[in-house]
Length: 143
Image 1 (cartoon, one colour):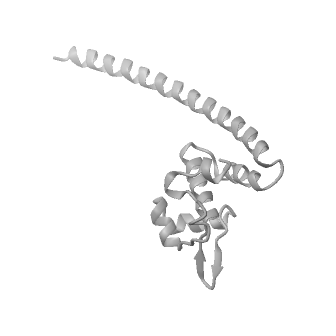
Image 2 (image 1 turned 90 degrees about the horizontal axis):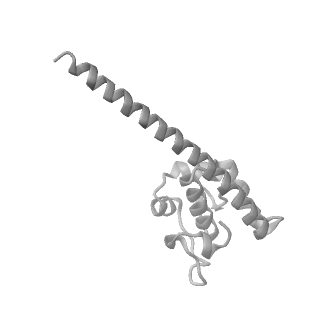
Image 3 (image 1 turned 30 degrees about the vertical axis):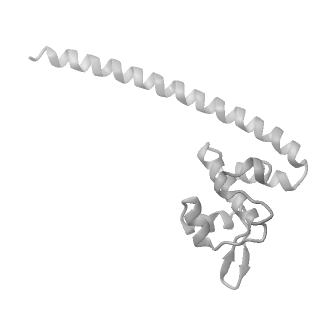
């Protein structure tokens, strides 16, 4: 989640040709498969800061990159506050290197949490298998 090239999905890359491009909320929402409400929510939280022209929101490449990062973070289970911290670290101290170290720590924490959940799910499935087998055996006694 650091630079535009490394952190942006193929459909949200930027280069010199698109640096001056802008998009409406409808275009951004459609491109990323989110609702206008979700985009406005991310703006309300300070995760996005589109330019305002009257009542119209004008999104620049930086906003698209940030939205891509927000959605990526959400897919892997980071809370919005954590996503904000990670994204904002790129522009502030300790900068990109600090951001990467912090992100690696967060990835380790998230991975550990998911592994724990996987073990819990596997245990629950095994218990369901056992219970199902017993139910079938008990039901067979009535036949």
